[in-house]
Image 1: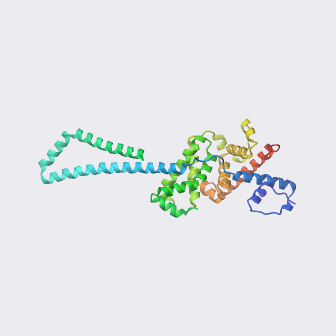
Image 2: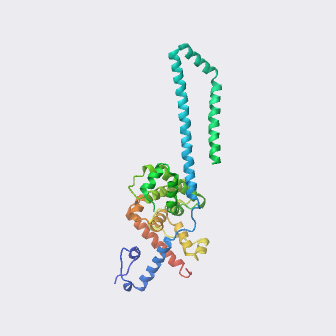
Image 3: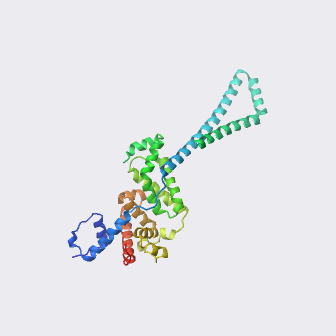
Length: 137
Length: 185
């Protein structure tokens, strides 16, 4: 009778072929046992693993990333809205009174650094406030 | 068992509790893949975290064309491969020139010491094997994916996966047979 080779023994253990036990020679049985042992060991889970609370940590990390993205979007929208409001106000002034529009621009240039500084401080306070709230939660 | 469609739609609607459940369900699967493919113990947790962040980001693109587990395993596999390419420490053993003629080299003293514990010894042997063998053994035996699913995960043809599995198991069996003959298992 033809002896089972390694490939056939592996297929046998995977349930693809089913020869009767009595038909196997001593060598084949020995080989089958060795493969059976190997298959069992290969299924064993590793002793080490991820720490307890891994899922919560990942959840927090994802939440943090999403919040950061939302914050950036909020600041960008606020900035664009501010510019648009400023432009709309200037246009409205021009329609009502051209001189008033020119005076407005002149006043803006005069106090430009104060306004920039004021806006930066305001956004800075908002940013710090959000960070402190997040750290406290 | 999670209802895949329900949990995915909840996560897309920013239900973080649902995302936590998904991570709990698949953290073992991801860890098994990363653990076998990446050797640096320190980085394993970070890579697993990166995998789940990618999963969260890409979930709206998941079209249920495969099982969720297969899709997550693919992300884990690709993340591990990218990591190995970036921080390649041992390219020779991961990508030998002729994988079909691969054989184990002589034992290190550390390996001889671990022989008393069959599982530990086997894990040491697997760690030495080329990446393709480690991947096939892990996904097939530990994660219990079929060869067809492994093809979807790795992009390797099913026939090659079957041949890698066969070769890897034969090599392990012969090595164990030779080394553990006189050692109590």
